[in-house]
Image 1 (cartoon, helix red, strand yellow):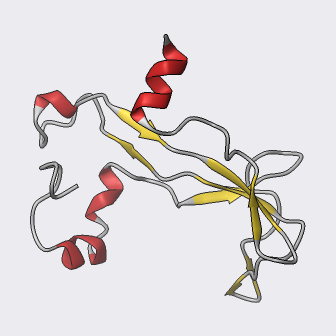
Image 2: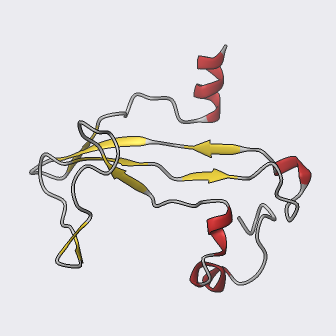
Image 3: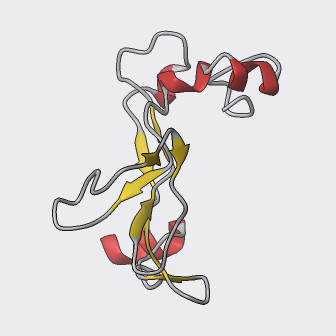
Length: 113
């Protein structure tokens, strides 16, 4: 975000101050299940839950620039992007369920044509 000019300053300090939340207001992902979002507890006894085989989660980093965000160059306003993968936790590690989904600019443009 600093390289794009969305934020300025020391990266570590920006992270500590959570300055990125203007453009990235949620976490990196969530559980997937029958209800899609928030299935199951994220913490047990105030400790982050350990991933177990059979769990499915989404990893979805994104960047969302509000259309009325006057602190950034006008060319960035109103843009949002998210790259999402759905992951199955297995006994051996993980399986990316969405591995075939296009993610590169070229692949997405080919799909859009």
